[in-house]
Amino acid sequence: MAEKRNSTIVYILTGIIVVQFGIILYLLLQQSEKKEIVIQNTDTINRDSLELASKLAEFKLVGDDLKKLKEEMLAMGIDKDSLGAEMDAMLESLWEVEMGGAITLADINNKLAQAKKLLVMKDLQIKNLKEKSDSLSFAAKVLKSERETQTQRITDMLDDTKQLSAKLTIAAKVKLENLIITGISKKDKVIDKEVVKAKELSKLYITFNLAENKIKKKNSKIDIMFRLIKANSVVIFSETNGGGYFKTTENQELPYTGKQVVEFDNTNQEISFIYSNKPEFRPGIYKVELYADGYSIGESQFKLK
Image (cartoon, rainbow, N blue to C red; front, top):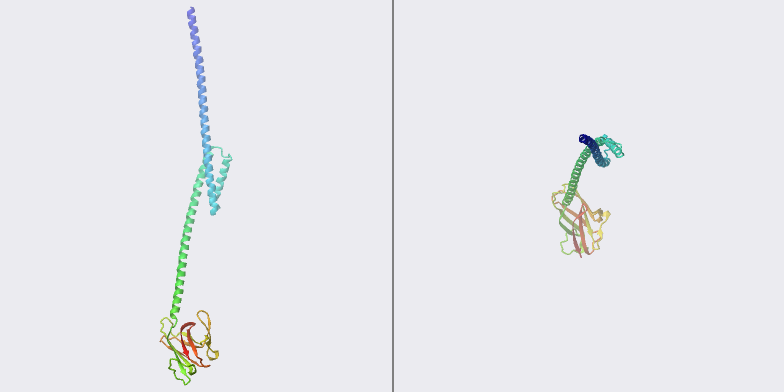
């Protein structure tokens, strides 16, 4: 009887222990599940915080790029259009986000997507404008180069024209041929002596020919001046006896003894000057100079005893 009672007690105690162990195990499982939920929630919060911080950093970088683009737009003078206003609104949103205005990750993602889209749009606009500007700049350089080339060609042509004109002017100058100085005696006879005495000489007879010139315009008038210079380098001239002054091609004013205006006929025409002895010739060396239209065409000298 006693053994049966003891066995029953053992069964009861064992049941109580099993129940208590079950309760403890249940409590432990409940605590473990709660801990797991807390860990999962903590991980979720940490991931969201990290993603939010990452998005904020990315949004700030995009905002910095937008600010740089705006500075470029201001420098290019294109900030007055609708895209410029849209950029200002997006920069304002960036400021609000930095100040904590957009508190959810969805808000950040939405604004970030808008900012990236605007950044691409503005960057493309500026690239297009730069390409147009570069194209216009290249066209301007080409036009400038062409204008400079054309100007240089015109300058070269003018220089060539000036050179040609100068050459033609030189080529058109008449030339003297066969200059002969003959002494005439007081009896109006040619003095055919190598040495002429001053007291015998009454007149000088100067003759020469104008050489043929294919450039010189036919029948054009030529002013021919004759200068008789004494041994002391003094020019013999008298305004009452046909003398006067003329200007050389070097703009020098010179006195002349006699002058003729002739028409050039390109036939090797002969020109002559006669100078009378007034006053009487004196012994010494004399020189005869001849000019045509202000430039020298020849000279010679003779000696009187």
